[in-house]
Length: 431
Length: 141
Image 1 (cartoon, chains in turn brown, yellow):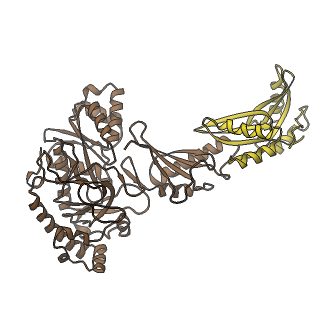
Image 2 (cartoon, each protein chain N blue to C red):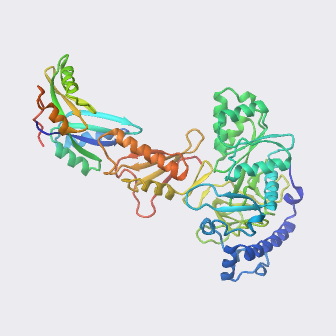
């Protein structure tokens, strides 16, 4: 099923001409109204007339998360605050968040692209959608919410967590579609099986995203729930979920190119890569009014494919995300820099910066273990003093970055030392 | 009353740790008189009473262990029924609280020592100085 046949199946030439027109408009809007881009474009002598073809996008500067942080809080806004109807901030973390603003037209845009995603998964007004993405500053919850409302489906705004209640509602109300992280889907499957509720579950499909996952996980989710599991992609800086979604042919995620212009670049040379080659995804918004984004470096690793898709959509497809081009880790949908954990660690007296972060997914949910070498200052004859300290580190990290971690104390010099950049993160998840 | 010192070693709770410690002792000719192990949440502390505690301390440190030397009370007791009772009765009467304890059997069925960790060792020594308790005084440095 296709939500917006005209947009999603638009002849490529027509699509390109629409993209060019919208790109010019975005450059004009950003250059005139966004303080950050006004300065940047002036320095680089960029005008809307600099863009004569889509290829000219390479003349535009990249935007990084750091640039966005620099504009905190409203430096990236293209409209006065009175026109902003909603605010979200990027997931994660301490320090300065990235603030994005949505005008009424941005919310319409978001509803439109999310309606497309959910429709790809077969959702109609006859469906009951259980939305287990978190509501709040995190974009997952409200993004799905708007899309479902646009379709007219019956939406249950469950938000994340409270698994027992999720399952009861799912059984009692006869939920047919689900939206959550893939790892949470598997966790739900475990709990449903344990509670003997599998037979009462009527799920037909789900859009899963906000973290990296594999074909193997897809198979498992599909087999256990007997549903169709599709990959959804998005990020707060661009709009939230709804940048791209898989159609039932499952051969990559269709990017809604009429609103988001994708490029894949080499993270080393920053040069654009040809279709099919793997590199870092860069996105430019074509219709965002509140916080237009020029060539945002997502750090997500993928490739673009333009061979026609059996579904009839002409939209380019991006491969499943296979990694990141920085050392950030995504845990339960939240981006964490190892340095944030280090900062929290070093705030505790007596701790030395010898640590390692180990990410695992033991029961389908991400877990972080922080191994900390015990130092002379930490050591005590009394095991309970050391145990108290261990717990103190756990609590402090939890408080500082809002993430529950397991702290393990290890012997001095037992963690690997390296000459250059230390290997701080060991990701043991099967991704 | 001589100073009796125990060696405390931090260790991860995983195979091969005690093996490594005892290998060092074996190479250095250090004899273990008593040992106690406590563990929680993936790590533990191994406490050892050895004949050459300073050497043990140095060698463990050289090998990268987190190690400490601390004084304990080593109270003589009979290795027969009622032996521990006699000692703990006196400790209790004198208001000495045991934080941690383990046993060194010096002569099987005859003489053992209760190795006692207390919060304030000088205070405890003072309280026990007038009692009938005998203390170990043969540990060489």
